[in-house]
Length: 225
Image (cartoon, rainbow, N blue to C red; front, top):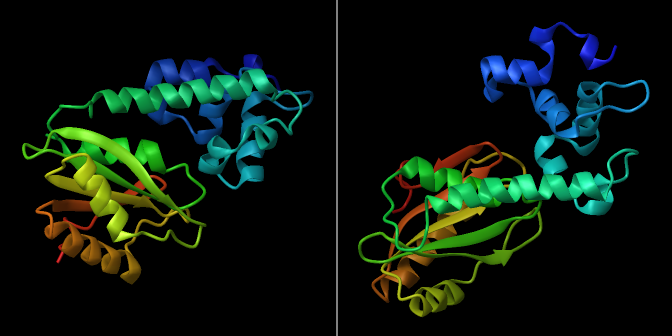
């Protein structure tokens, strides 16, 4: 049955306007983006199939153009639109962590790092460099690995901290598995980086692990050593 024939309260667009975007399922949100379905399938049904085929919404949003456009009706125009929407979301969060702004909200920091790293299919290790007033200097992605892990080199982290004249850093990396729990290896590399950065008087304020929609702060867990 076409979405236009559904009761108004069940149509994704009307439901969003009445109850807010958080009330919609992943497939319903995707249906609003898709706008139309394909022969024999509504936009919501198509959204469900796409999410299932890609193994989740996160993987779908991270798909490259070739993967995304395999389906009839999902051409370069829709791929470009999706990339534009995602980049706007990242930039909106980036405005809250603009260069020279002081970090005043742990939630803003988490949301920003999540927007940068949550959709990555490989592990990415990043640093947020801060001055002595905890104002943002720069965000950098330093290392990329396979989905099994990233090779993090303390010497390079120290070199970049010196380059930016940072007084403190917040470390972050993603777990492509979607599970944010820190491993023994995560705790080990955090300790190595703390020791290396301490030699140049740079403090590690936190190490935030991103696992899909979940985040874990090693500082809050008391795991910074």
